[in-house]
Image (cartoon, rainbow, N blue to C red; front, side, top):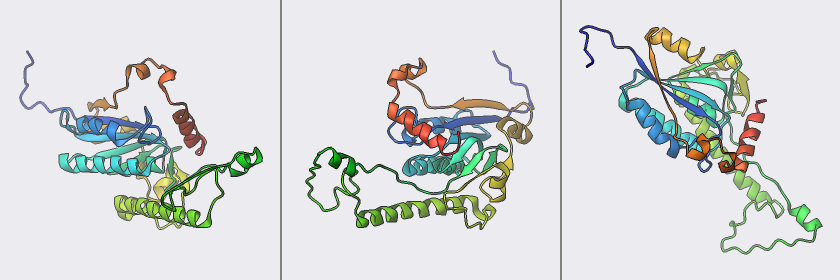
Length: 265
């Protein structure tokens, strides 16, 4: 039987959620709102934590999933009145920075890469290749825009214009979110929302992060040396737990490697 000792000070509890990888709605093992919803529900509720710490290591991905995850973090933080701290490891770029910005304070390492506040759409054009080999592309649509940006047909100026307009709208949403979350801390640097990214102290100077610091060191400073940690993360299927690469999506692995490679990782 556990005895309760009167006047004994309760040890602080910090819930730790690791957000590592590309942000995507469909791929196994990647970050998305569906898989993280139960994780955050537990992290903010179980044991009534004194704080939630996000350990972020993501080059970004889906803007919609980034927005959904960020909104869920803020909703639970407000509901439970729990402070949220983000700790950036290698990179919090693009959508990865969106997740970090959901925290009340952002800590980075001297070598952490932060930023890349922009939107990108990339693909390939294969119309000349198939034409060279005598392949004819046949497409029939009901609706003049249904074959917009078909990679097997030449680009149309009106399609490019429309795509850039859509990217611009998403980019503005991203910039507005960062400005709202970071408030007066953010710099008026003209490069801030161009997709540029920075390291450690420079990111702090620009207001994209608050301090140099690591999880255990910072949490001990705030909650004492006897602070407890409880780590939460998405449950993995038995195939992933056994490391069976046959269950991994080859395209998802390539996508992730390409995403990290942009930042030299």
